[in-house]
Image 1 (cartoon, rainbow, N blue to C red):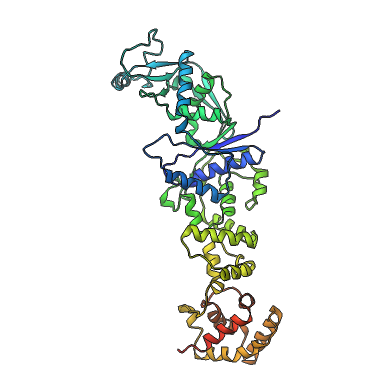
Image 2 (image 1 turned 60 degrees about the vertical axis):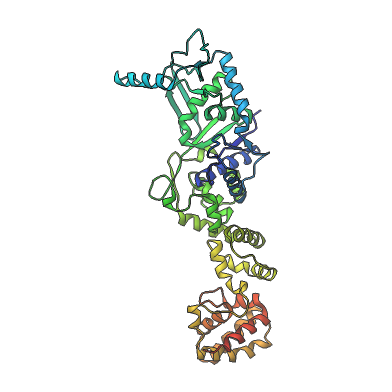
Length: 469
């Protein structure tokens, strides 16, 4: 029987959730959830000087926005310090680790001498094979006994087999001189205790795997499946940074990208399933595997993100979009919508969501239903409300007074009116857009009229027709 899959995401709470970290979390979530396994969250807060509750909260908020739910409560690495130290003492008692009393000066002298002789500066402690490990009142660190011969092979599901010569591995420190455990020990102990079966993380941790395997092997623990994924680069091929634009996951929420579009894009960033670009969460969960992850860094492409986001906005249900728009306005500091605005927004959603790539674009198209009288035309729209146009609007309103308020009738009335004026409907559309929305570019005039209703439409037309100017 195959063991249940358990993955984890283990961010350091020293800042926002980087877009690369968000993708790592997503890959772990997809792999576990797609196999009926567990996805765990561990906050690696051992760096007390830089870890903050605010950063932890920012990470949790970003994960919630992306829909990455985790099992159980987040685990604090710092709170497990005594357990980490316990493992180091177990190795010490078993003779697989040792006390090293070397000072920083001793280590530096060793390295200087090795450099002068053209030898490796990898430190070899004289205390490794010392028969007597007592040294009254002297501070010491605990080091693991690294293998001296042969090779360590990292069997990686993405990178393939990676071989490290054991003579390149040092006797890694497990406990500092103050008795506190180092990060490399804490990670292994936590992953083992949490039952993690697959460690999916950035390939900047690849070299760490060989050193962490020393602890797994010394404790006779099962080594997890390694999967080291390439980092994300900017369009110029360099590591993703602020110069490429937003790097924090929450920034993309406040920029108005839907969570589904972001999930789709990040899943596709460095992983592929044939030529599929647009796919649902259900498809991603069904398809995602480690074999589909490429070995080369993926390049972040904002145009592709916009394209996928637009497709997800168009495919979403109207009610779901309304909920996400409310969350977007809340996250971005926008004005809250009242009941009337929410009702109008929902009614207009079927045509608003077409060809909108972001929520700000959608809300701009929704200006007609989010505005209330008096409608103030912008500069471009004002040009469509000259003396002649206002006169035409005054003539038009009686024709709409008793017309049936359905699309076919409205099209017949407006096209007939335009023909009677010796023009085409296109010439009439500009003043109507300006009157109904205060914009020169809007959704279809008929769509707006149907959503606004007869009373509001006529009130706006009459208002625009009577403006002095």
